[in-house]
Length: 449
Image (cartoon, rainbow, N blue to C red):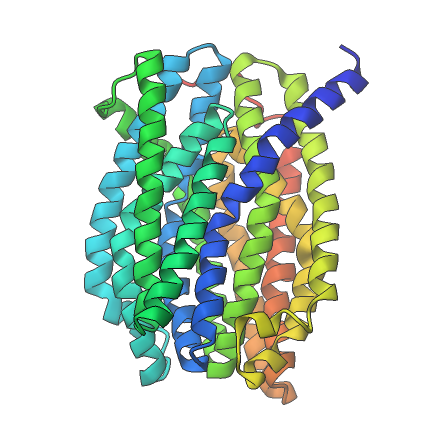
């Protein structure tokens, strides 16, 4: 096959996986966008409370993303090696690991909710709203982790369409339930949490039915294998450390924004939710890269893996340019979708422009991250994640202290802080990821023992 034919075939595979993955991936930020828009019209205090609670909840969930990221390449490698039964079995083990971790974290998180909220030092009113949302949301934590593991299994099987359908159903249900509980019953921020929890468990029910059919088709046991669960936990440990550094950066940014004031915190909630939406949209290509790189290395096709890297990078940066331009063009309109507070809306346009400018860099970073995750290069990602965090700490603190020293406030201070994360932190990640991708030490073929 000529290089042109290979490129076309790779592009088809990328689009086949990435387009459906886009819909599934943005389901999570769409849940947050829905919550933000509906709660935002209750006032700036509930919106700020949602900002705190979401930062904590997304930190817990984000730390567990290895349940998907470790499962996808593991399943894909076995599929590439011709062992479909082993591929499904390894994914089922991931589901059991997700259930166990989710149950423990839900109980611990509910008990620790007052302390977790109190760490941020927000006002009593904001802390009360955050505590209500967070304590209820803990009931959906096991469901969130099961969705991670289930989608990781299906992606490894080169199926991103099923997660798209499940996400679409879940998103529609979330909108209807939240509207009913928030406005119909007048439950306020509590109604938002209840509606989201119900929608998440509904998604789990659909996933389990689909995976049960896969297990029956290939003769895989639905019960956990001790060795498989333990292997998943060990292999995910490095990805856990990688993700912990990322979540620490996000928490530091939230803490720094809290020091600016309640209106700034509410505005930051809108900005960071839009950042996650852009990130998950760009991450669709990273998911395609994970699945294709894992399968290619499992079958020993190194040249195809290189082609996947080249094409995903091109698609990623190009998509970032388009999405960034859309955000910049609508920067003075988007704030009013998420808040009725003129004070909060006025803070947002400069920060949204900064987010738009950072989108092409995000496309580069997310694709390279996905390629190395698909290759199982988790140890490198873990250690360089700590390096990237060390770069961001002075940037975040400098944004706060520099704003105070320069007499900046409001929109300018928020934009500076947003840029320290969306440009400064991403630039550090781009450097460490690019240095690794330029070499070949990450391209280990076959199925690890």
